Image 1 (cartoon, rainbow, N blue to C red):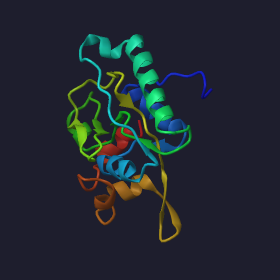
Image 2: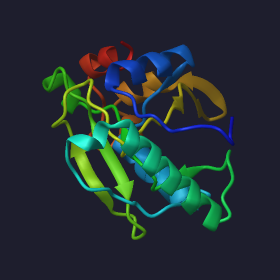
Image 3: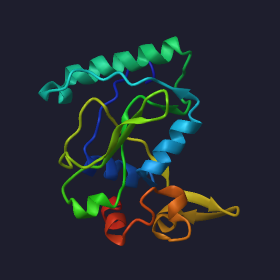
Length: 178
């Protein structure tokens, strides 16, 4: 419930399974930037000391409490579009050339610059307290007509509006559809 919860990060395979179960996909870096710009509530990143403890339950709980306190101080409530609180797992062409990795991006500062540039340094099962999963609907609208967002992401005409890398490759889209 909203009063009894903890935010738990997921590795890429689990995140893709959850996205698929809800007919969603992970965002691109351009989508993450746009979401940050349009968010109803932007929290300032609160990094914790790096090290092996970053994937511990203690860190998950401590960071979750930090986020809840930030939201409370800002007058935030569950259900608003929130940004700046986590790095996002994203889909990116870099994943098809770096098999077995997870793509991470974001955790924007108040000036709009992300702490984490697009990175595929971690293995696909890696997850730490700073990672968040943001799901994006696969249904997009072009001139009022519903279309599958995955098609737009591979289309040279539309992909540049949705992804800073331009069109996603078919290999990346197959990976994103796990």
